[in-house]
Amino acid sequence: MKVETVRRPVILVVDDDDRNRRLLEALLIPAGYEVIMAADGGDAVERALADCPDVILMDVMMPRMNGFEATRRIKMDPDARIVPVVMVTSLDAVSDRVQAMESGADDFLTKPVDKSELLARVRTLVKVKAYSDHLRNYQRELEAEVERKTRQLSNALSNLKSSSLNTIFRLSRTAEFKDEDTGAHIQRMSHSSAAMARGLGLPETVVDRILYAAPLHDIGKVGIPDRILLKPGKLDPDEWEIMKRHTIIGARILEGDSSGILRLGEVIALNHHERWDGKGYPNGKAGRSIPLAARIVSVADVFDALLSRRPYKEPFSVDKSLEIIREWRGLNFDPAVVDVFFSVLDEIMDIRDSFRDEECHGLSCVDDAG
Image (tube, rainbow, N blue to C red):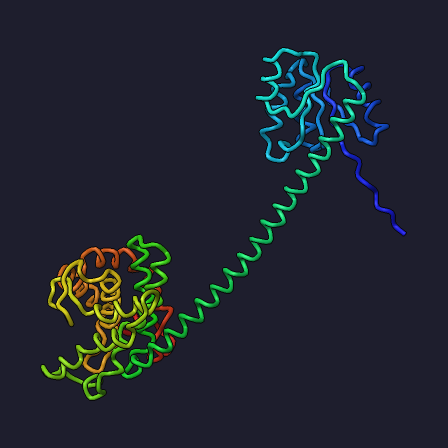
């Protein structure tokens, strides 16, 4: 049967006088302590940091570095600072004791040292150190457990967010599938909207909400008759009035949620066809009265639509599409949003490559559009 070895508490004895060190050693070893020694303050700091003893018996008057300075340096170390330091000195002036306390000393012993007092002080401080070690280890274990749980929750949240976004994309396509050849349009425009929101310096939580809510922008198309939605030509005035109602229909579908993704989706659905100059629909809002999320989605939606085939148009080239975005700066679009659009254009083009329409047959939709 294996017998576990009980660790003996380690006492660091610091004194420039070898006789004093040996005397303290002779008193401590029979009491069950392991003793290590240092002959001056500099050596004491090195031993304390290297061996992390349970108690330090520190002389004050020593060459090279006195006990006050050695104690101060030991207490600066995050690991060694919990080691109790007992100043063993013949100094008895109040100022000396104040200086010792200011340096970080935990207790005092007066030379010549009384054996009973020495062992009583050491025994008490060893218990203090053991309790400090227990608390520190418990804290580290607790921090590790919190970190592990946080990592698990973060992974779970990430999986939930990914699943939720996928669900939103799929639901949003109920409207998009009524509109021929849109393919991955909702994915491209939502990720582009998020890139622009991030470029504007919006908080990451807001960026995420826009990413999730942007796919719902055209959900109201489910209420538009196919004869209008799929008409391969220009709509007449009556048809156009019906088409414009998809913004109101979308907002009504999403209304009733006081906060969160659906509330933002409602705002975007209702306002993404408003124009900066006030000539948009359904309410003719202008400038900053249009919610920022809708202003962002508007640019992302139009740019992707310009590059995509629709029942009423062939895709424009990249250069032509960018020219139109520039021309509509300050008319259809918020100038600040257009500026950030161009600042993140490389990212937006990468997004287009990542979410390609099936008609591209493995090639970039940007290439086909160009």
